[in-house]
Image 1 (cartoon, rainbow, N blue to C red):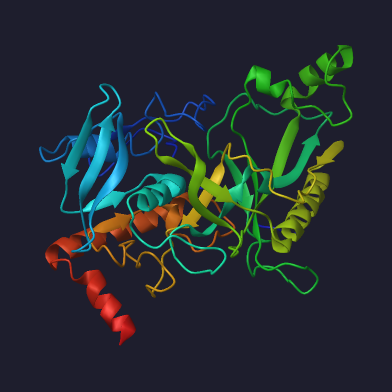
Image 2 (image 1 turned 180 degrees about the vertical axis):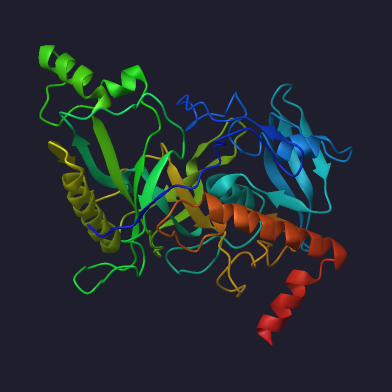
Length: 390
């Protein structure tokens, strides 16, 4: 088909490895627990195996687990964060932790909520379209990952083995890599095939659409196709719209009496049209792969309002103008320059790939910003803000 697939970059080790900080990682056993779990075998180079153990070797680092942060302590008169207030979930005791620099890295929902609860930044108002915090909410949701499943009568795959990033992708339908003259959307996405490892109960549901969901035929097909099916999906770009945002819920509260975060979200025509395109391309590839039965996903007309997984971004967006963004390129709050918000909440909109590598890159950038802040006496954001206004 003249396409250009490549192996997905992964943090799973293919052999024993010692990183530059002296942390030792083991080769992946493809045990299939990787996707939604930590790695008991230390074969996945996540922070639990790399960053945290290295930090623990230093006397000036302390890790406090089961500490639920409820507020950023904020001195509004001096525009400074003075620390955080948290609850020890083991005892229920409340503590105030002073800090010279505060870094929020609790992902998009919680970072937005903490800023709103702490009274930091102006919340977005969808009626006036003014305000920053909660604006530009977007992301790749489960209902946005659409594609095709193929069932093969004469091919078997070792689908019981797997890892989080085991698989392949292609970028031929990403961004401007293809001709948009005959499509009714902008942007694009990657097509992926992953092998996560199918557990016994999960694999029993992987059957062609026309198979009954119980009885003799169901049992026969669930056994037969357990290792004879593959899935392709399209990871689309997702646009930001003025009608999609985060705010504090006026009704529902958590166990401490604080409002929960509320999501207001609906698809636009671009998302609906790109989903149809992605399904069509996945079907074409699956057909070329020789699948005997191909079941296509149905392009959703509307978001299913289910946040069971996916990539949620925006709300504390990065930019070069304090009037339209919450943080600068160091992920440093324009108005509170000793507060850094480090994660995917900085995305003004979502690209056509998974967000993790970009979040990692932004984290290194933010670390540089923290150093600059401490070395230059906290004038970084202020100077940039003055420069913008000049």
